[in-house]
Length: 489
Ligand SMILES: Nc1nc2c(c(=O)[nH]1)N[C@H]1C(S)=C(S)[C@@H](COP(=O)(O)O)O[C@H]1N2
Ligand SMILES: [Mo]
Image (cartoon, rainbow, N blue to C red; front, top):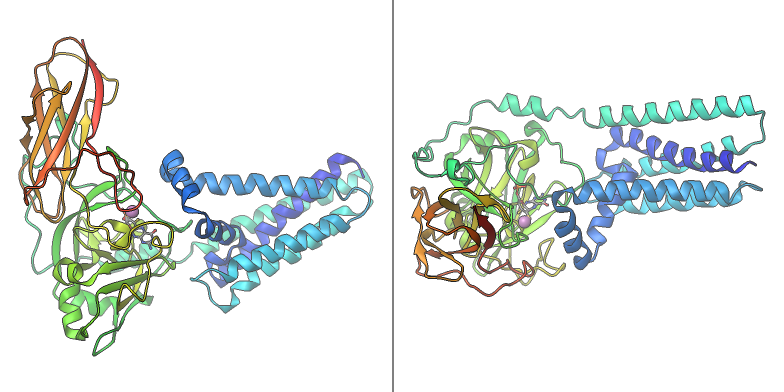
């Protein structure tokens, strides 16, 4: 067989296999798609050092990089298997079966699929094997060309159909049906002067599209509120199951809260603020009756992510949020419901698409990131960030330095700035909205033309000034003073 035909035989068999699996997955559960399942399994198995490297290098594009990398590797495997099968179809057939088994294994490890899920990788295996052997036969060039084109067309059609049917769960329809969520107590209006957007700070409330996002899963779980329920169990007197309707009928409160990710480097972007509407977990758990000895609320998401939060924090200020910024939660931020606990980093508290609350102990259960090298207990550290000037900017005229600071749930009392290692000067603070949110700041400095560097540090309302020592995000959050170098013209 000619090398070109052999290579295409292998490549098309791979494409057909992935497409067939994706199509069947649309009917037995989108996460059963072998391509996504292998990607998700790879994420769960990735050692922490590699994951940290991926996040620092690619940021939130890490998943796109993974999926593209997988596509290239699979295409390469297909071509190699095709080329190895120029004399006999056996090597390619073996590769098809082995890849099929990898797909089955990956799907079986997924937490969010049903028993029928295995049909998707089995369809991949069958399609890959069949297409490979079908295209491998000796044939006239014109017949070969026709078979290749027909196969490619069918594969693309199957893949596209799978994508369309797989996303048919009408999340947006369900969000619209939720309608207005009117809290009994509204969060106070954000006063004018809470941010200094003109000077370069973020706006106080982050819009849904600018809100940072951290997900372990490759695809956003698609859940309708009508089909969702929350189970509350474990060390409680009266376990319960709550529907969305039952939750929204309860006392809804609205609170402005800043969410923060532990993987933020000093000066990093993974922090945003929203107005969340929901029920206080404390009210609910007191109804359920927490038993003595419990010290952890262990929450599980529809996609298998888990987080463990200290029970005392949760009882005091935790919330099951169903709304954000005046709307039902966006799908990407956890629709129908997520946890929000002011003062704890997201990985130990902010479970999106939450379906299960288990009242338990730290000795008994470990959240997703804990065996991967992150601390079990992770209160947010007092920190500050310079947003303007940007690094290496050329500043004309007077120098305005502006940024944000946070110390949830203590609140920010003071931000100081110094230039070129000189004396600290107190910055002007934005209006104080809540101890659960960030606080913007600005200061004008009188700097001579030339190169300069500025640093900032925050002091929280307990009197603690943020640590100068530079620590990495692992295991419980970065520390250090953010500094920016720029020049004045
Ligand atoms: N189901 C699920 N919930 C999750 C995560 C996740 O990967 N899966 N990431 C957590 C982390 S690490 C953070 S910082 C916050 C981020 O919330 P956001 O994406 O709405 O900003 O969600 C938390 N909740
Ligand atoms: Mo995070």
